[in-house]
Length: 293
Image 1 (cartoon, rainbow, N blue to C red):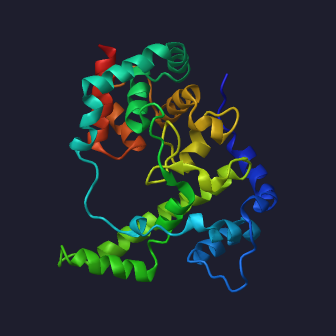
Image 2: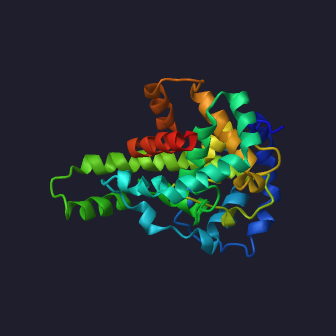
């Protein structure tokens, strides 16, 4: 039986391993004169207990070069109904139905254990990754680290000047506030991800996820992985394990308060914690209804 990841065990186990994994990444020692654009993050992470000997070669690797597009602030929401229309096609619903039938034993076990409807979990997996077809193409570390740099004074100024070209009335304080919130969120997720990869044998710079650093079939953020992932073996196994994805989503929703036969309004509030998007919620519920039929 899958079991919930033990957060405390990971927390106690991971830090001593940071030093032992340095050799994986340090193909060459960084020059003494090397100054990483990530130095503020390195200093902050080191002050919070992560070994600098692990962090410096990791962030000196060319694969962690900052991604400028992820440091841009946008005032336009990506969450529009058109984005989700592809999941309501006949082909997508048939794909969901096939997954439902092929994994019915696991889905029934999840439903019995977590009291989350099978159709809801299948709908989420369809939308999040098409059952593992698309778990993300962006390296997680430079993705989150780049967003965590968003609140640098120069980056805030650059974004403010760029946004003023299309919206001359936009207040500087709004841009600054957005940058600081995003950077704070990304730093937390980056720290969680570094905690996750400490015991892993995978090269952490080759672990890929979404443009927001979400992982695996279930597209969990690193903080959600630590808190709710049902994983018996490793992150590498969890990323594409159907069974563990199903149980992880069930565990997550139950932890948010999901029960059998909830009214739709309550379901919507709980699904909002998974993705802050009304079109996303509408699509999950509609796909679940169609699978049920």
